[in-house]
Amino acid sequence: MKKSMFLAVFVISLVSSPAWCQRQGARPYWYSLEQGKFYFRNGDYGKALMAFEQARRDRRTMYTRMEQDIIDLLSIPEVRYMGDSLERIEEYIKERYQVNAEAALAELYYRYPKANLEGSAYRALEEIGRLKDFPEAEYWIGETFRMEGELGVALGQYQKAHDQRAFLENPGFDIEILYRMVDVLKTKQDYTEMEKWALEILKHDSLWFGGSGIVTKHAMTTILENRDNGLRRFITIYRYNNIVVERAHRLLGLYYYASGRHKQAVEHLMFSFLIQNTILIQEVIRSRFDFTFTNLEDLMREAVRKPALAAYIEEAEYYKTLYYFAAALYSDGNTKQAAARQLWEFLGAHPAGGEWSAKARLQLRAPFVEKIVEMP
Image 1 (cartoon, helix red, strand yellow):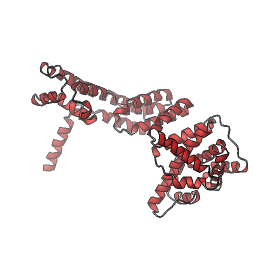
Image 2: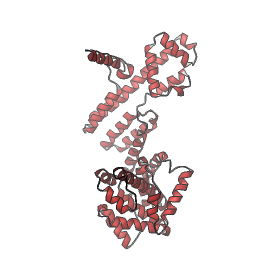
Image 3: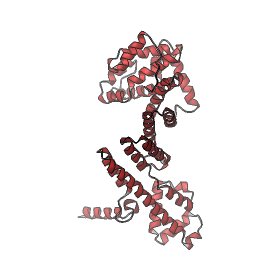
Image 4: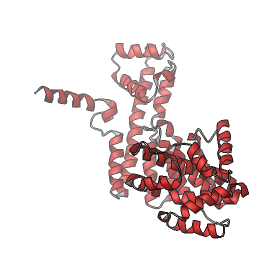
């Protein structure tokens, strides 16, 4: 009996809050968003688009109403005399039971750090107004248009979602938006814009940018130039597991190789290759704590035994990355060609590499710089 009474009280309090029901009888904006995702995953793109657009409208309606609640409060003569003091206005809200304004501020503080308002009531009003944007809905509208083949419209939606990234429920989701933009631009063969947004992703790579990144890149390439054991020392010495930026490095490396910018291709494919091997080594060690990297052959022997790592190797295009990393090293000059040959030797002797193993064997017989018109 007590349990059912508690549940009833909980439900009543939940559905009566503005953030839950956007006034009595209305569905919350996130409900429409989740409903749209359900339709999307089931291939019903028409219904999905309608639900995502409804979610966008619902959120705008909700925060427009809250914005008006604050405007109404600030318009009261007594409140106007308090100036811009958020603290004094909050006291007035509690004393006079201004429940709508109180709920609006509570919602704002949940979404936005109160300390950043610096005690300004008008800053609070401004920030509530900004919360009308719904980047997740813009992204999913873009996804729906992409699935319908409307790539230009989809790209515009992704751009809008990225512009509104400050209001994402999951701050890390902005990377997903950027990757989707990069993928669409690659499909459209707009490589200049693809490069621009892939480089935007790399702003999340602390090792790539800044003075320390320049020093690290130089040290890495210097080690690779060692003719005897440069490749082995490179993988033994360096570890970097920033998996978020790996694909951006890979895409840029392939693009620079295809466009003949071999030095830049080396740097990006070097980072991609390093991250991929770091992930493999770390995951192998998780299941076999005594494992120590000695060479790529031993690492692959351990990795392919594990279904999850075998799937990662395929998803990350490991063999393709390795092949073009070697090709970029070979194309960039004589000092790096020994490392290129070592990579091709490993790949050529590794049957799981498929077409990339075959291409590596061709390179070993008669090395050449590929002339590529489009990205591989």
